[in-house]
Length: 135
Image 1 (cartoon, rainbow, N blue to C red):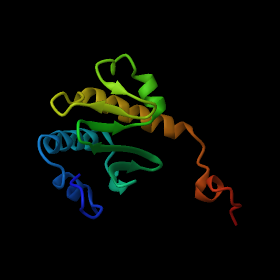
Image 2: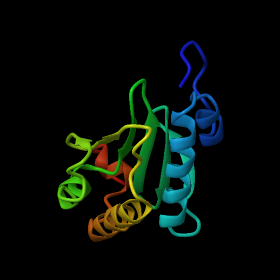
Image 3: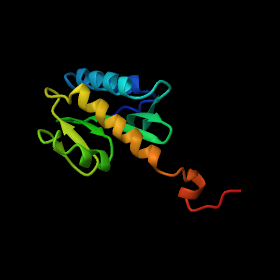
Image 4: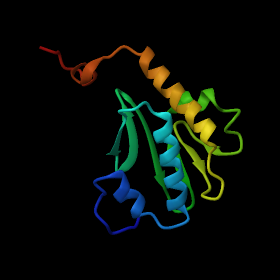
């Protein structure tokens, strides 16, 4: 994202603010994520980055000075570590150069894994996660 600008309000604004060649890569990544999430998933800006949200599942993506990143979560990255050997990863992030994007098939598999993992977790609700009793 260009420095000195206010935070984008939409995913489209975020992507429009990213210089090429990262912008083209983010557009492809966005399309891949959109095709992997169920109908009704929302595009949101969260932590000043674009994300897809479906229920409690979120997957973020962003552009940085030397790479693009996908943030599917640590458990998803661990599950796909063999397929991700060619990319730099950390606990919850996959970094890839703008000229070597992730495959659409792999993105779809990771989104399905994220959705499945979140479906298996009990719904704690916001109040409980913050340590407050629900009324």
